[in-house]
Image 1 (spheres, rainbow, N blue to C red):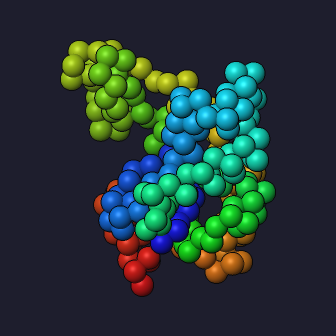
Image 2: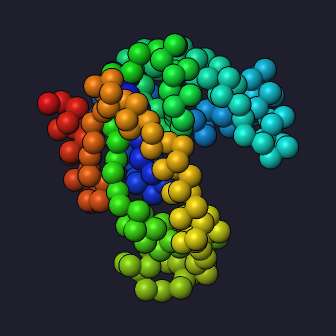
Image 3: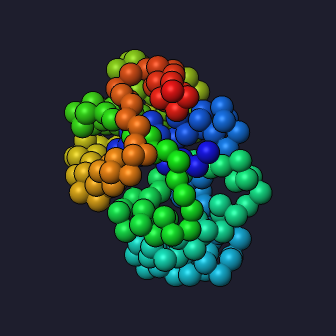
Length: 205
């Protein structure tokens, strides 16, 4: 089973990806993790990517695609894999088609206003790394005593910019995969377990 998980920032892709990978015994491929691993190991592609990252530039598609090609050839991908955070653009999706087939694409849908509330309400502990949400936690201090703070990229105005970018660059992938008959859409504005159950139901239908 070869799958892609789509969804805007804050839709819960990372959480659902871990559950899907465990349920079906497939590799969970986070492009961020893959990129960091290549850079850490000093591979030729990792060194090339680092040169761009050090200048604050985006890593070009051909470098990312090269890493993806290497990653899906790894032994843990023999039973299949799930991409989380890739492809991000139609150009990347077209390049991916040239190196592997994709069976299913799951799009986790959540309204923008819910995403903004979900992300901008997050608070982090600088001491232990715990995460809280203002809707369910009333204190300004973590259980360990640390003073909670809001990350800059969790601020409402920053989230709105990230969502605009998502709708412009990544949302066209929804049509791209729908036209190929591979798209499954689930309601991400539900409890985590309910979303996981809907994904499983859709995949196994």
